[in-house]
Length: 319
Ligand SMILES: [Fe+2]
Image (cartoon, rainbow, N blue to C red):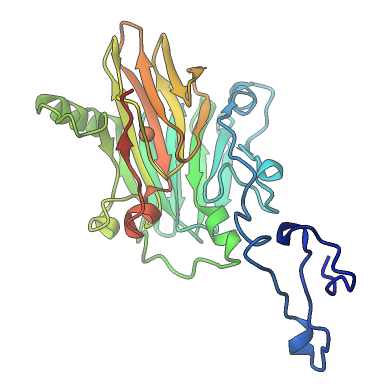
Protein backbone atom coordinates (compact mmCIF):
# COMPACT_ATOMS: atom_id res chain seq x y z
CA UNK A 1 0.00 0.00 0.00
CA UNK A 2 1.42 3.35 -1.00
CA UNK A 3 2.06 5.88 1.77
CA UNK A 4 3.44 9.31 2.30
CA UNK A 5 6.89 9.54 3.84
CA UNK A 6 6.77 9.00 7.59
CA UNK A 7 6.99 12.49 9.06
CA UNK A 8 8.93 11.20 12.05
CA UNK A 9 11.37 9.44 9.75
CA UNK A 10 11.19 6.30 11.87
CA UNK A 11 12.42 3.88 9.19
CA UNK A 12 15.78 2.34 10.10
CA UNK A 13 16.56 1.19 6.59
CA UNK A 14 15.66 2.17 3.02
CA UNK A 15 14.54 -1.44 2.67
CA UNK A 16 11.67 -0.82 5.14
CA UNK A 17 10.34 2.26 3.39
CA UNK A 18 6.97 1.62 1.71
CA UNK A 19 6.10 2.89 -1.77
CA UNK A 20 5.99 6.67 -1.83
CA UNK A 21 3.38 8.89 -3.48
CA UNK A 22 3.37 12.52 -4.56
CA UNK A 23 2.62 14.76 -1.54
CA UNK A 24 0.94 17.30 -3.79
CA UNK A 25 -1.01 15.29 -6.38
CA UNK A 26 -2.61 18.18 -8.22
CA UNK A 27 -3.30 16.03 -11.26
CA UNK A 28 -4.46 12.45 -11.74
CA UNK A 29 -1.24 11.77 -13.60
CA UNK A 30 0.80 12.88 -10.58
CA UNK A 31 -1.37 10.78 -8.26
CA UNK A 32 -0.48 7.68 -10.27
CA UNK A 33 3.26 8.06 -9.60
CA UNK A 34 5.02 5.78 -7.11
CA UNK A 35 8.58 6.20 -5.87
CA UNK A 36 10.95 3.47 -4.68
CA UNK A 37 14.65 3.58 -3.92
CA UNK A 38 17.79 1.53 -4.32
CA UNK A 39 17.08 -0.28 -1.05
CA UNK A 40 13.47 -1.39 -1.50
CA UNK A 41 13.24 -1.92 -5.28
CA UNK A 42 16.07 -4.36 -5.80
CA UNK A 43 15.54 -8.12 -6.35
CA UNK A 44 11.75 -7.86 -6.63
CA UNK A 45 11.34 -11.44 -7.87
CA UNK A 46 13.24 -12.79 -4.92
CA UNK A 47 11.15 -15.82 -3.94
CA UNK A 48 13.37 -18.76 -4.96
CA UNK A 49 12.38 -21.08 -7.78
CA UNK A 50 11.95 -24.54 -6.23
CA UNK A 51 13.90 -27.53 -7.57
CA UNK A 52 10.65 -29.47 -7.56
CA UNK A 53 9.47 -32.63 -9.23
CA UNK A 54 5.86 -32.79 -10.45
CA UNK A 55 4.52 -36.31 -9.74
CA UNK A 56 0.85 -35.68 -8.98
CA UNK A 57 0.10 -34.22 -12.42
CA UNK A 58 1.42 -37.18 -14.48
CA UNK A 59 -0.33 -39.58 -12.09
CA UNK A 60 -3.59 -37.77 -12.79
CA UNK A 61 -2.95 -37.81 -16.55
CA UNK A 62 -2.35 -41.57 -16.49
CA UNK A 63 -5.48 -42.31 -14.41
CA UNK A 64 -8.33 -43.87 -16.39
CA UNK A 65 -10.80 -41.99 -14.18
CA UNK A 66 -9.52 -38.63 -15.43
CA UNK A 67 -11.70 -36.83 -17.99
CA UNK A 68 -10.26 -35.29 -21.15
CA UNK A 69 -8.50 -32.12 -19.95
CA UNK A 70 -5.35 -30.06 -19.67
CA UNK A 71 -3.55 -30.56 -16.34
CA UNK A 72 -1.22 -27.62 -15.60
CA UNK A 73 1.97 -27.90 -13.54
CA UNK A 74 1.16 -24.66 -11.79
CA UNK A 75 3.29 -23.12 -9.01
CA UNK A 76 2.06 -19.54 -9.50
CA UNK A 77 1.44 -19.14 -5.74
CA UNK A 78 5.10 -19.98 -5.04
CA UNK A 79 6.29 -17.69 -7.82
CA UNK A 80 4.01 -14.85 -6.71
CA UNK A 81 2.26 -14.30 -10.05
CA UNK A 82 -1.45 -14.20 -10.79
CA UNK A 83 -1.39 -16.45 -13.86
CA UNK A 84 -0.61 -20.15 -14.14
CA UNK A 85 3.14 -20.77 -14.43
CA UNK A 86 5.65 -23.59 -14.04
CA UNK A 87 8.47 -21.04 -14.14
CA UNK A 88 8.46 -17.26 -14.58
CA UNK A 89 8.28 -17.62 -18.39
CA UNK A 90 7.13 -21.21 -19.05
CA UNK A 91 3.93 -23.15 -18.42
CA UNK A 92 3.85 -26.91 -18.83
CA UNK A 93 0.78 -29.12 -19.00
CA UNK A 94 -0.04 -32.78 -19.22
CA UNK A 95 -3.03 -33.37 -21.47
CA UNK A 96 -5.27 -36.42 -21.19
CA UNK A 97 -7.55 -37.17 -24.12
CA UNK A 98 -9.74 -40.22 -23.69
CA UNK A 99 -10.17 -42.60 -26.65
CA UNK A 100 -12.29 -41.07 -29.46
CA UNK A 101 -12.53 -37.69 -27.71
CA UNK A 102 -11.35 -34.24 -28.77
CA UNK A 103 -9.47 -31.68 -26.67
CA UNK A 104 -9.60 -28.12 -28.05
CA UNK A 105 -6.72 -25.78 -27.12
CA UNK A 106 -5.76 -22.19 -27.79
CA UNK A 107 -2.63 -20.77 -26.18
CA UNK A 108 -1.81 -17.08 -25.78
CA UNK A 109 1.83 -17.92 -26.45
CA UNK A 110 4.41 -17.62 -29.22
CA UNK A 111 3.76 -21.31 -29.79
CA UNK A 112 3.19 -24.59 -27.96
CA UNK A 113 5.41 -27.65 -28.09
CA UNK A 114 3.86 -31.09 -27.55
CA UNK A 115 5.47 -34.46 -26.85
CA UNK A 116 3.34 -37.58 -27.27
CA UNK A 117 3.80 -39.69 -24.11
CA UNK A 118 1.31 -42.37 -25.14
CA UNK A 119 -1.40 -43.14 -27.65
CA UNK A 120 -1.94 -41.86 -31.14
CA UNK A 121 -4.20 -39.29 -32.72
CA UNK A 122 -4.34 -36.17 -34.82
CA UNK A 123 -4.26 -32.41 -34.41
CA UNK A 124 -5.99 -29.94 -36.69
CA UNK A 125 -5.07 -26.25 -36.77
CA UNK A 126 -6.39 -23.81 -39.37
CA UNK A 127 -6.36 -25.76 -42.67
CA UNK A 128 -3.75 -28.34 -41.57
CA UNK A 129 -4.02 -31.72 -39.94
CA UNK A 130 -1.20 -33.94 -38.68
CA UNK A 131 -1.29 -37.50 -37.38
CA UNK A 132 1.04 -38.39 -34.53
CA UNK A 133 2.02 -41.32 -32.32
CA UNK A 134 4.10 -42.14 -29.24
CA UNK A 135 7.46 -40.36 -29.13
CA UNK A 136 6.53 -37.70 -31.72
CA UNK A 137 7.05 -34.00 -31.05
CA UNK A 138 5.02 -31.25 -32.68
CA UNK A 139 4.83 -27.47 -32.51
CA UNK A 140 1.63 -25.44 -32.79
CA UNK A 141 1.18 -21.73 -33.54
CA UNK A 142 0.15 -19.53 -30.63
CA UNK A 143 -3.18 -17.71 -30.73
CA UNK A 144 -4.79 -20.28 -33.05
CA UNK A 145 -7.27 -22.95 -32.11
CA UNK A 146 -6.25 -26.59 -32.26
CA UNK A 147 -8.37 -29.71 -31.95
CA UNK A 148 -6.53 -32.76 -30.66
CA UNK A 149 -8.33 -36.05 -31.30
CA UNK A 150 -7.35 -39.34 -29.72
CA UNK A 151 -7.84 -42.47 -31.80
CA UNK A 152 -9.09 -45.59 -29.93
CA UNK A 153 -6.66 -45.50 -26.97
CA UNK A 154 -6.32 -42.67 -24.42
CA UNK A 155 -3.66 -40.13 -25.35
CA UNK A 156 -1.28 -38.38 -22.97
CA UNK A 157 0.60 -35.32 -24.19
CA UNK A 158 3.14 -33.07 -22.49
CA UNK A 159 2.80 -29.46 -23.66
CA UNK A 160 5.13 -26.51 -23.01
CA UNK A 161 4.28 -22.88 -23.79
CA UNK A 162 5.59 -19.42 -22.93
CA UNK A 163 2.16 -18.17 -21.81
CA UNK A 164 3.53 -16.68 -18.54
CA UNK A 165 5.95 -14.56 -20.58
CA UNK A 166 3.07 -12.95 -22.47
CA UNK A 167 0.94 -12.72 -19.32
CA UNK A 168 3.81 -10.92 -17.54
CA UNK A 169 3.69 -8.20 -20.20
CA UNK A 170 -0.13 -8.37 -20.55
CA UNK A 171 0.37 -8.94 -24.28
CA UNK A 172 -1.39 -11.04 -26.89
CA UNK A 173 0.13 -12.93 -29.76
CA UNK A 174 -1.07 -11.19 -32.90
CA UNK A 175 -0.21 -13.39 -35.84
CA UNK A 176 1.53 -16.58 -36.78
CA UNK A 177 4.86 -15.33 -38.11
CA UNK A 178 6.82 -17.01 -35.30
CA UNK A 179 5.25 -20.39 -36.07
CA UNK A 180 3.73 -20.18 -39.54
CA UNK A 181 2.12 -23.62 -39.33
CA UNK A 182 2.32 -26.84 -37.38
CA UNK A 183 5.79 -28.42 -37.30
CA UNK A 184 6.07 -32.20 -36.91
CA UNK A 185 9.11 -34.14 -35.62
CA UNK A 186 8.18 -37.85 -35.88
CA UNK A 187 9.92 -40.23 -33.44
CA UNK A 188 11.53 -42.16 -36.30
CA UNK A 189 13.21 -39.00 -37.60
CA UNK A 190 14.24 -37.95 -34.07
CA UNK A 191 15.94 -41.36 -33.68
CA UNK A 192 17.73 -40.88 -37.01
CA UNK A 193 19.02 -37.53 -35.74
CA UNK A 194 20.28 -39.26 -32.56
CA UNK A 195 22.13 -41.83 -34.69
CA UNK A 196 23.79 -38.94 -36.52
CA UNK A 197 24.74 -37.18 -33.26
CA UNK A 198 26.25 -40.40 -31.87
CA UNK A 199 28.12 -41.14 -35.10
CA UNK A 200 30.21 -37.98 -34.64
CA UNK A 201 32.48 -37.64 -31.59
CA UNK A 202 31.25 -34.98 -29.20
CA UNK A 203 33.63 -32.27 -28.13
CA UNK A 204 34.29 -32.02 -24.36
CA UNK A 205 32.99 -28.46 -24.51
CA UNK A 206 29.62 -29.70 -25.76
CA UNK A 207 27.13 -30.35 -22.96
CA UNK A 208 25.47 -33.72 -23.52
CA UNK A 209 24.33 -35.46 -26.72
CA UNK A 210 21.06 -33.80 -27.62
CA UNK A 211 18.77 -33.34 -30.59
CA UNK A 212 17.56 -29.72 -30.60
CA UNK A 213 14.26 -28.80 -32.24
CA UNK A 214 13.87 -25.73 -34.44
CA UNK A 215 11.83 -24.81 -37.52
CA UNK A 216 12.08 -22.94 -40.81
CA UNK A 217 10.68 -19.88 -38.99
CA UNK A 218 13.35 -19.94 -36.25
CA UNK A 219 16.28 -21.42 -38.16
CA UNK A 220 18.48 -18.35 -37.58
CA UNK A 221 17.85 -18.49 -33.82
CA UNK A 222 18.29 -22.29 -33.76
CA UNK A 223 15.48 -22.29 -31.18
CA UNK A 224 11.95 -23.65 -31.09
CA UNK A 225 10.57 -20.16 -30.29
CA UNK A 226 12.40 -16.84 -29.98
CA UNK A 227 12.79 -17.20 -26.22
CA UNK A 228 12.50 -20.97 -25.74
CA UNK A 229 14.85 -23.80 -26.55
CA UNK A 230 13.68 -27.41 -26.69
CA UNK A 231 15.45 -30.68 -27.26
CA UNK A 232 15.82 -34.27 -26.20
CA UNK A 233 19.02 -34.89 -24.27
CA UNK A 234 20.48 -38.36 -23.80
CA UNK A 235 22.83 -40.15 -21.45
CA UNK A 236 24.38 -43.52 -22.36
CA UNK A 237 24.43 -46.29 -19.71
CA UNK A 238 26.81 -45.63 -16.80
CA UNK A 239 27.49 -42.09 -17.96
CA UNK A 240 27.09 -38.66 -16.40
CA UNK A 241 26.82 -35.17 -17.76
CA UNK A 242 29.54 -32.74 -16.62
CA UNK A 243 28.34 -30.50 -13.75
CA UNK A 244 27.49 -27.07 -15.08
CA UNK A 245 25.26 -24.07 -14.58
CA UNK A 246 23.47 -21.49 -16.70
CA UNK A 247 21.12 -18.59 -16.17
CA UNK A 248 18.25 -20.24 -18.05
CA UNK A 249 15.82 -22.45 -16.18
CA UNK A 250 15.38 -26.03 -17.40
CA UNK A 251 12.08 -27.89 -17.27
CA UNK A 252 12.56 -31.56 -18.08
CA UNK A 253 10.31 -34.48 -18.84
CA UNK A 254 11.78 -37.89 -18.04
CA UNK A 255 11.22 -39.99 -21.17
CA UNK A 256 13.27 -43.07 -20.40
CA UNK A 257 15.94 -44.09 -17.95
CA UNK A 258 16.43 -46.61 -15.16
CA UNK A 259 18.67 -45.82 -12.21
CA UNK A 260 18.94 -42.17 -13.26
CA UNK A 261 19.16 -39.13 -11.05
CA UNK A 262 20.15 -35.48 -11.15
CA UNK A 263 22.28 -33.60 -8.65
CA UNK A 264 20.98 -30.06 -8.23
CA UNK A 265 23.11 -27.91 -5.91
CA UNK A 266 24.19 -31.13 -4.19
CA UNK A 267 20.66 -32.50 -3.76
CA UNK A 268 19.88 -35.87 -5.34
CA UNK A 269 16.70 -35.94 -7.44
CA UNK A 270 15.67 -39.41 -8.56
CA UNK A 271 14.17 -39.64 -12.02
CA UNK A 272 10.58 -40.85 -11.91
CA UNK A 273 8.83 -42.10 -15.05
CA UNK A 274 7.14 -39.24 -16.95
CA UNK A 275 7.74 -36.75 -14.11
CA UNK A 276 8.49 -33.09 -14.81
CA UNK A 277 11.53 -31.64 -13.03
CA UNK A 278 12.60 -28.03 -12.52
CA UNK A 279 16.30 -27.22 -12.58
CA UNK A 280 16.42 -23.70 -11.16
CA UNK A 281 18.47 -21.02 -12.92
CA UNK A 282 22.13 -20.72 -11.85
CA UNK A 283 22.01 -24.00 -9.88
CA UNK A 284 24.99 -26.33 -10.36
CA UNK A 285 23.59 -29.52 -11.84
CA UNK A 286 24.58 -32.80 -13.43
CA UNK A 287 22.60 -35.77 -14.72
CA UNK A 288 23.62 -39.36 -13.99
CA UNK A 289 22.70 -42.70 -15.55
CA UNK A 290 23.66 -45.62 -13.30
CA UNK A 291 21.49 -48.02 -15.32
CA UNK A 292 22.19 -50.26 -18.30
CA UNK A 293 19.95 -48.49 -20.82
CA UNK A 294 20.16 -45.23 -22.72
CA UNK A 295 18.39 -42.45 -20.80
CA UNK A 296 16.48 -39.65 -22.49
CA UNK A 297 14.84 -36.48 -21.23
CA UNK A 298 13.02 -33.69 -23.03
CA UNK A 299 14.23 -30.26 -21.93
CA UNK A 300 12.57 -26.91 -22.44
CA UNK A 301 14.52 -23.82 -21.36
CA UNK A 302 14.02 -20.07 -21.54
CA UNK A 303 17.48 -20.16 -23.13
CA UNK A 304 16.54 -18.09 -26.18
CA UNK A 305 16.14 -14.98 -24.08
CA UNK A 306 19.59 -15.45 -22.48
CA UNK A 307 21.30 -16.17 -25.81
CA UNK A 308 19.72 -13.08 -27.34
CA UNK A 309 20.72 -10.86 -24.40
CA UNK A 310 24.24 -12.44 -24.32
CA UNK A 311 23.68 -13.42 -20.73
CA UNK A 312 23.54 -17.25 -20.73
CA UNK A 313 26.29 -17.50 -18.12
CA UNK A 314 27.08 -21.11 -19.05
CA UNK A 315 30.04 -22.71 -17.31
CA UNK A 316 31.24 -26.14 -16.33
CA UNK A 317 31.74 -26.58 -12.58
CA UNK A 318 33.95 -29.63 -12.15
CA UNK A 319 34.96 -29.51 -8.49
FE1 LIG B 1 21.97 -27.77 -17.86
